[in-house]
Image 1 (cartoon, rainbow, N blue to C red):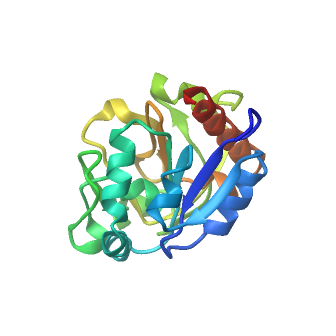
Image 2 (image 1 turned 90 degrees about the vertical axis):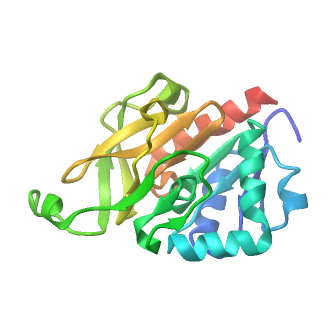
Image 3 (image 1 turned 60 degrees about the vertical axis):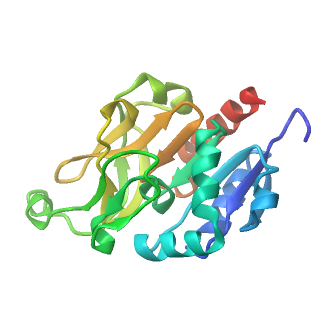
Length: 218
């Protein structure tokens, strides 16, 4: 590893959008390893868990490969972690998407679905798909959003979102028929419901900040 780059491990567990994430990270001069092998991932500086798809299927795949415990230990050791979309939701206890199926339980709280009656108020649809703002609500999120304006837009595509029991971890909130938690920030961990890799220059700046924060730890 040089002073100009870090090694990022993108967890390949068959849940989509991995290559777009890897490409966006590479644009920030990160060395990217795409793998489902714990030995390889353990040698990286930043663990990235992206993903789109079903919560229950994702947990089943992680458990089969022993990656569920690997992620939990990684986070418990305070190593840099980036979760995107499904990689955000899996950090919580359970999801309505899978009939209350269990998650990684890194954070307390459920993952819930948008309610039709709330979405109808704004003539919206489920899934929430497209551009929306993410308003900062905690100091812990500040380093991740350095150089990013308060009303910048990020790209979303989801029907479910987490409801953290401990609100101090909530990094940003977004409005779509109701306010919901669109990211969490806790030390070296950042996870978002929006997709930085699909959010243009603003998303790339966010990834740049995440990588810079990971460098400081090393």
